[in-house]
Length: 372
Image 1 (spheres, rainbow, N blue to C red):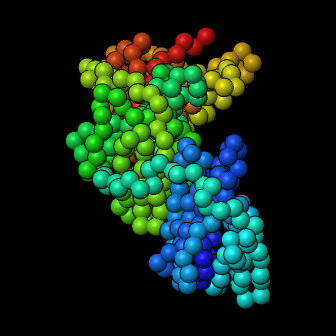
Image 2 (image 1 turned 90 degrees about the vertical axis):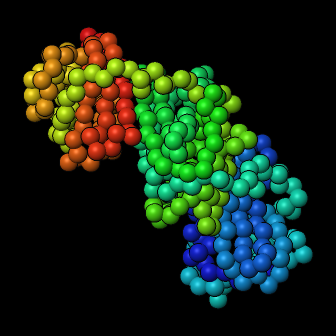
Image 3 (image 1 turned 180 degrees about the vertical axis):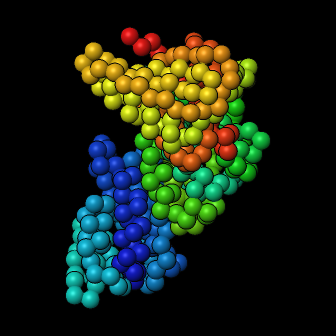
């Protein structure tokens, strides 16, 4: 192996994927980058067997070859080298020599033959999705995913597909968040909805955030893998071995009474009122919907009580219920503060349905709580 490559380009690619390295794996070699030089490109592969990331970088390839090197050390060193051209060569398979204008380092390597075969890196993607849409979908569902590791069927983001739209769903059974975006060319088994693990979704989001949001990415869900690829990277991740819970009954429920309110106003009022509510983990605020006014109350024996009023458009019967303030804010906060949010009221014991007036593909359902 012998290549010439730009330092800043290589550093950027290595930093982007290093968090996928298997630092705590029982296979020590998974703490390494697998480097493969061939045909004027360098391919860097890293994996913890749950998620695999591949970066492909243009370079001058003087001699092809492959090896593995400690990912953290390699990444740290390349990042600290001055900008400009660097040379990377493999000396008889024993040391990886990295040189720049005034620097020279020789790193220990492990032969690539010991690196396990990784499933999914050769799968061709059939679907297409806008990069910014994929990031938005993760942002607007991951917060609702359950932390209960014993319930695999809600332990990640559920994936569905309908009418050329990819659908992500997050739930912990007390709330549900759903968003759909156009993604042509996908096929999903709708009888056994796949589940993307929370950590994997976070890593995919972090990597894709560095891409131009208008770039079109390849995406597929096949053979127990979730795969995303761009022009110079590819991510393959193992899905949870379970089928996501059914959620369609929520979508087919009768339409309730609609209350419309400005996102920024209701969000700020809930946040203030929740300061007075009981509990460090769960703060319950009471919402009372009356004609053209939402009354919001937060109270506790320790702190006292606080009241807020927010103007709205509502002409239905008065409705009062307590809700987890964080659940409400998690859904509302990503919405533009100048947008109108619609609350759909179906009864004191029924889930509260929330969605932006101008983005009905983003839905939230929140179960009411008792406010003692």
